Length: 301
Length: 276
Image (tube, rainbow over all chains, first blue to last red; front, top):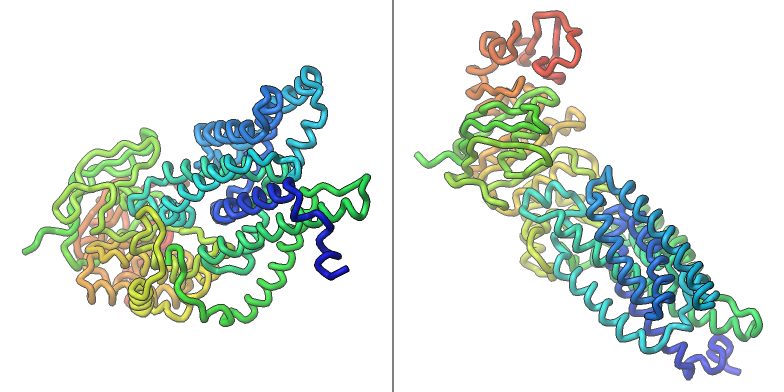
């Protein structure tokens, strides 16, 4: 038995559900990286968390009407994002309040939909799938949809990158330069809604923020420029999802009757990355000149 | 003689129905250094935002603002602006250099690819404001004085003709105040740049001010320091007796009535020493 075979259980690469899981996980991690970095810069992590939680309603509704959870996540998240915008999420004082109100209303609906799921369709597994995800059960037909929306989100972000960075740093500075701060913020919020929906299909609605915020927060402990932070977050995100898929697959070997869920491994790995980046970051802080040999930044630099 | 870089005519602004500025009129000539002096709440920020054309929710504005002879536009490249209290979080991955670079084209769509030319432009400006040594540090980790230099460089990147600075000296230690004032004055004279700088303290600006715009109770007086900072003029502006004392080269504006009138909007600027 080679070392590789000891790490990768047999049948890993030949399994189509593993291949789908790896592709979806990587795509979602790549899309989440820039969104997560901007979300942390804008201190809107709570909005991201609320969007994820509210997405539960969409996932439950998706099961109810039989269109699958991803469409449910997408529709409900965009609606919730638009509603937060209307209720004043852009104004810092109204932001948490508006977010909280939408979150509460959404979770109420989720409770109803889950109840109807179990009574009308007898899909009692729905809550676990929606809330905590199950990357191995994502159907391969979902992949094109994930890619389309992923590319859409990245395209929007690429277009608004500079004004968004300026507006996130100081709305006042951006407004003085003619940036339509409200419009840029709304475009960001819609991108965030879509991105959270993609995260939800990967690791579940409740855990979606972990994949959105976690790698970004970890990268911000090291990177000092936006472009680098995004690249590092993308790498950390892909690493966590792929390693998570591998470990979850391996856990079938450890105990075929009680394999551990892939979402647990992904979230745990993101957390470990966050801790490790903190260690590396504090070392860099102590010797800041170490990073100074870098070429110009890719974003805003 | 060329046209004034800024002409404000009968500008009135009300916030939520409450008049903040009443029929303010003044002009700023190219290269002129004007101090905008007034206590907290006198309307300094409101005036600067009105000049920039920034609307505040629920505000009504009348009168005219001409920048370089033309009515204000949504984005006026003739104006550079440093807002008050820019909150820069130490966790934000934005180096001083990145913020300065956003001064070139931060309003444009898309993202900037790294280029030697941009890097050189930014370096030049960082040198001009003396910020080169902390160019690679995160902006949020810099001291107040260092941040002011970086924000100044950001505002100067667009080659404005008029620089609006909102309380750049607030929360700076005494030495930084002197350094920042000297820096702004030097750059203004080098680049023939008109400056309108708000402050609640007159004294740091005395050596460099060509003109003063003194705000109180929603009204303003404009002129040279000698024309404006006089007992009779300020008494007329405040509407109650005020004395102006010169002590060791410093100017003290002194209210003659006993303090204790509470939150009087016509109160003497809080940063100015008051002897009652």
